[in-house]
Image (cartoon, rainbow, N blue to C red; front, side):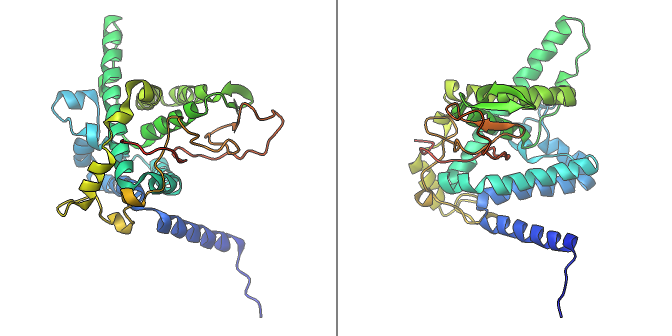
Length: 310
């Protein structure tokens, strides 16, 4: 007697097993970055207006004294129908599948401080761009909505990470719907496509793009805490976050990390045989053009290198 499982059921079971495996492997910060935005997204269906006051960011909100969005906006993906739910779930899956390797390499504390530092830099850049565009529109006598444009979610942070990794292998060649371009220009082209689809809302992605291109020239890496300070924070008895098992995930201490992370190109952040773009197929500049063995997958954060914060 053989029990035949229908193909859709078997596929669902395999998908659930895969998600369970991805969740089990995710360390503390990765789990937090996946769970908190998703939980706030569903909570927003009932208390959206109240949560928006504390989590959303726009120039007009900051002008009214609601400046805390500069710190919290990355956790907020407002609900807006079925598509927004699917997008929030997709972002959570990208986080769970893409960040664990980086967190294991860098350590949870370093990862958390990098995310916080870059997120604040993106939000400040967003506010500056919104003000400049509003000033330009007003000077030209056009009606401006830039002060009302919101900035929220993890997508700007992902755009920044993608830009850093594209610059790390900037001479590599990739194709965008058959158009060959250098890897360093890929994020700019991608965000430009987003601008055609999203209009003014793409300003947050341009902010992430700007921080990605300016990360090394501005020395943002120097803002990260040193290993010694992170170790003191992780060893403190009164800490609420550092050293804790967030959502059951293991906190990777500095002494447990496996070599740090490099998104700036001082060492190779991504293997040259592996595609790493959302759309298109990347290849190294020394790789023959006819070689099509490279895979294509969405990887925003990855690789190993020197430790950040020293």
